[in-house]
Structure formats: C-alpha cells, structure tokens
Image (cartoon, rainbow over all chains, first blue to last red):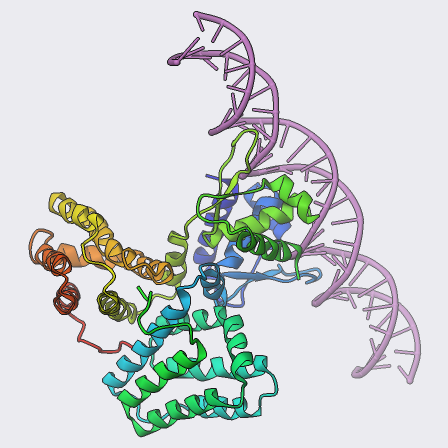
Length: 223
Length: 223
DNA sequence: AAAGGTGTATGGTCTGACCATATTTGGTCT
DNA sequence: AGACCAAATATGGTCAGACCATACACCTTT
C-alpha cells in the first residue's frame, strides 16, 4: 500500500466522519501532512487523485486562517476519461446512443413539448459567427434533448461524449458551413419534437448525424 | 495552467503521436522530467492523475533499461466514477444499452459464433457455490458478449455499469437462487447466438433482465 | 547450458526551500 | 467613526536533492 493511498483513505474517512459536504474546507496541505505523519508530497498526490475524481478542488493564496481545499461536485471528469478512450468507434457510439435516446424518449411518451433550452440554442446557432460558437450552441441543443429525458447517468455519459468530440464537431461545421443544412436538420428535429412525431424525430436525428459525419455508414462498426 | 497539467497534456499528446497502446512503456519519471523541463514532482502528479483515469499504471523496481510506466486498460476507474453518479435510473440504463448492443451487434452481422469466453463463463456459473461467485462469472458472461462486439468505449461503459451494479446483482441471485432460471436464460441467450438468431437473442436478453430485476417495466423511466 | 548472485536504475517517499497569490490585518487618511 | 490602502502572512505550486526497497538485466559460477 503506497503512502498516498493510505492518505487517500484517511481523507475519505475524515470527510465521512466529519460530515463534510460541498463547500466545506479541508485543512491545508502542511497541516494535513503533519496530522497524518507523512510528507507534503504524499498529501499532494492524494489530493491530486481526489481532484481527478471530482471530490476536491484546490486554489492558491487563501492567506492566513482557513484551509485551502474544499469539497466540490464531480463534473468534467467523465469527459476527461472518455476523451482518453477516444477512437474511431466513438462517433458511431454517439450515433447509436442518440438514436436510441430518441426512440426510448418517445416510446415512453412522457414529453409533449420541446424544451425551451432547445429553442434558445436554435436561435443562438443562427446568431453564431464562428464554427466554435456554433458548436457550443449545437452541443447545448443536443444536451437539452438528452436532459429532458430524465436519466441523469446516461445524460452525463452523452454530454461527456459530445464534449470529447468537440474538435470533430468544429471540423464538421467548418466543412459544411454553419448557416446551411445543419440548421435545417436542427429545425426538422425541433419540428418533429413539437409535433410529437417520434418516427420522424428519429429519422431526422439519424439524417443529421449522417450529414455531419459522412464517413459513417449506418450500423457500421457500431458494436 | 498548473505545470502538472501541461505535463498531462504533453504526455497525452505523446501517447497519441507515438501511437502507444496497451502494454507500451513511457519513459521513466526522471527522464520524463528532464525531457519536459519540469521537476519530478510535477511529473509524478501528472502520472497520478493518469493512473486515476486508468491510462497508466506504475510499478517499482524495473531495473536498468526500459521505463517503468506503462499504458494500461481503463478498468475499475470508470466504475468508481459512475458509482458516484449511481441512482435509481442506472438499472434501466443497463437494460437499454444491453438490448441495443444486441440489436446493433446482430444487424451488423459480423459475428457468427459465440465467443469461447461465454461458454467458459457458462460452465463456471454451473460450478459456482455462492451468489458472489456466480455473479463474478455472470459478469464475465455479459462482458464477453459486449467485448465481442468491438466498440471498446461502449464496452468499457457497460463493464463499469455492471461492476457498479455488482451488489444489486448479488442480491438478485440470492433471491432467485443461482442454479435455476437465470442459468436457463443464459443458455437461451447462448443458443440464440450460436444459431445466429438476432431477434431471439434480443428477446432472451430482455426476458433475462426482466426476471433479474422484476421491479422494472419495459421502457419505464429509461430516459 | 543451467543456476545463482550482483549491480543498477526504477518508483516511492521525505526534507527543505523558494515563488506568486489571495486573504487578513493594521494603519492611515478623510 | 468610517473608508481606504499597504504590509504581513499563510497558502498552494514548484523545484532540487537525497535515501530506500524492489525487480530486472547481466555476469559469474557450476
């Protein structure tokens, strides 16, 4: 058992024992090292792991009084993880998940109106002046679609996938132009959702992805 | 931008540029520090992050010659992460992903025989003497099913989901007994795969999940 | 050729130091 | 008394250098 791993365990235990929650502070690195009878290096390595897991976040210069580490909420870490697993298969993974999201969402028939966030994103994409800006709102559009569905876990996975694919998306937008067919696709999806037409929505999403990533044949190399 | 973060980025880039894959080695910590003009501490913090993300794994005493850090397969880390996101919706997420995996796998029609690992797991489940042991091989069975499909990213996500759900699975096995219907389901799935009957395989998986997690109505609260 | 011993570079850890930063504190001015 | 500003201070971030136990590569011995 490496030292920083025992530190990790003791910090976790301390968080649980003291009932620390989001916003609370841990002791400073030096104080933590002294309390646990280890070097500051080991404490730092443990904190780095906790930071990677989204448990704490550090910030410099908190002056005297009060520790400098605080409990935070895990957010971007899944994206980091998936980005490292990025390969040629990722794109088709997104395609499948997106289509299935649509299918399930509509077969459940729990939503009858397009979320306001989708409408906002649509307008923002119209006003975008660069591919990067366009993609930002493009992601927001699809995230809104996913979020409305209600499964937070899968929603997080999909959001992470899209964040990881941001560079691919920018390239696609640059290639196709950000004022043309892509927006037409988005409006078609939006219309289908407002109309409550599940089959049309699924087909629209599939067509949209096929246009954005033309090298992709349906169901090819998906699993 | 903290130093170890730039180190992180440079290591990631190096992995991509050199086409490093599972089993390949990175330079040693000292050499890496010298190449990137940073201290060994910063390199170590970066490596700790990569280790947390499941990208590398370190081991001491590799003697002269050859670096000591090697690229590894992300395994338990995603499960750790997803466990933090665990909620009531996870089960239905697994159900959907599993079924879709089957559909896509067979519609692609790229596999005609059941993997040997599935057969092995089937026998091991027969020989199991405790629910825990049964679930271990149960997971192996489903993982083999997923792995044969070829999308490593989704495969990792599914494996993580199952690992995160291990306690639920053990409980289900304890409730149903580990010699009866569950194994019958597995054999039905296995038979369908060997026969190349996609529709039957999907139906078998769906039925199996419905039996294991009876509180779940199809497509309920899935997205 | 096989077996065993040894050297060596490695990761793991520690110590002690310096820096830039943000908070606190204390003093100054109005 | 109140508002404002500057110095003191503890923090996280980084670095350099050292020591240890370990496991591999190589060489000696049989």
